[in-house]
Length: 520
Image 1: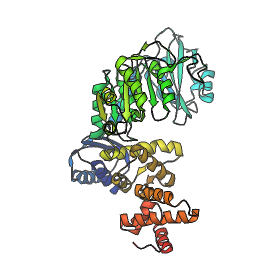
Image 2 (image 1 turned 135 degrees about the horizontal axis):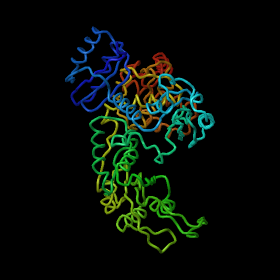
Image 3 (image 1 turned 90 degrees about the vertical axis):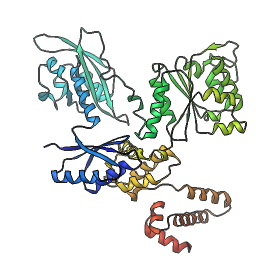
Image 4 (image 1 turned 135 degrees about the vertical axis):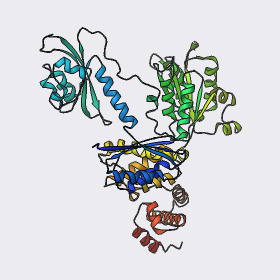
C-alpha cells in the first residue's frame, strides 16, 4: 500500500479556490504533505487513507463551487522532477556521493558502484572515510569548512585506476554545514563535472513566489522582453518584488554572463550618486585621494544597471542620466575624456511619474527614455491566491531562523490573511508570519497567533503623538491605548473581534473598557 495519495483538481480561474480545497482537507482531519498550485489547477499530496474516506473526500471536493474535475495521479510535479534528477545523476559518467555532517553516505550513484565495486545498498549509511583511503581532505571539508579541495586516490581493483575528487559543501540558510557532495572522475579525464541540470526559464523565477494569473502575466511579459536590450521600467508599490524581477530579466537576457549592478537612488545624496554612477579622477573633489575610481556604468559595461527608486533622483541628476541614455557615453568627475559604455538599463519606481511630470519634478524626456517597456508588478491584494504559497514559503524559511517546527497554518488563519488589504505587500506579510511564528507553540499557526497592524490605529497614534508632546508619558500611552481600543471596537462591532485585531485577550478588552469608561 502506498504511503500517500495524490489528487489533481482542475478549477475555474477565481480567487479563493485553493483555500476552499484546503479547508475541506483540514476539516476531514487529513494530513496534507505537499501542495502545488498553478492557474486553474491545484495538486495535493496527502497521507494515505482508506478507500471509503478517499471516495468521501473526492466527492466533497468535487462538489465545491468552482471545481471542474478531480482525479487521482501518480506523482506531483516536484516528485517527477526529483526522480528525473536522480535519473540524470545516475546517467552521469562520473561518480557522485553525498554525505551528511557525520560523514554518513546518503546518496551513491550508479557509476560509483562500478568505481568501488560494490552495491549502493551496502554502503548507504556507512562512513565515507571507510570507503576512500585518503580521507583527510573530506574531514577537513566537513569539520573545518574548507572548500574547493581536490585530491587523488586509488581504488584497489583489477583496473587499479586513479581518481580525482572535487568536493562542495552543503549549507543551510544560516551557513551551517549540513554535509558535502563529492564528485569522482577518472584522473585521465580533463573535463570538469558540468552542471547536472542546465538552467531553464522557470529557474530564474524560483525566488518569485506565486502562480496566480496576475503574477504569471508579469513572468510571461518578462520572458518576452528579456532577450532584447530595450530599457525596462518596473512599476509597482513598495514590497512587490521589483528587484527580484530585475534579476530574473537579467538572467533571461543575453547579458546573463555579465554583471547586474544595482543602485538605490534614494539611498545617496546627489554628490555621491554622481560619483557612484560615473566614477571620478584623482583629486577631482575633496576626499578623492585614490587613483580615481570607475563608476557603476563602467562596472556594468556589457551587462545591466538596475536603478531602483528612480523617482527619487534630483532634476540635475535626471539631466545627467538622460545624456548617458542618449549618447551611450560617460565622463568621470574631473575628466574631459568621454568613454563609451554598453549598458542595459532597468529602472524601478513606486512613484506616480506621470503626476511628477505634471508637477515638474520629473523630466518628461527622461520618462520617455525609461518607459520603453513598462512592466506593472501587482500588489499582494491583487494576487490573494498566492498567499497560501507565501505562507508555506515563509514558514519553511523562518523555521530555520527561529528554530521552530511549525508545519503549516489553519484554514481560518489563511482566511484572515486573505481578508487583509496588505498595504505593505509581501514585506508586510512576511513580518506578520514571523510575528505569528514567534507566538506559536503548536505545529500549526492559529488565529490567536495572528496580529495584523491596523493602519488606522497607527495613524491615530501618529496624530496623538504629534499633538500631545507636552503630556506625561503615562498619560500619552493611556490616551493612545484608549483610542486604539475605541477604533477597534467601532470597526469590528465586537469585543471578541476587537481583541483578536489588537492581539490581546477578550478579558483584557473588557477591563480596559471599564478602566477608560469607553462608550461605543
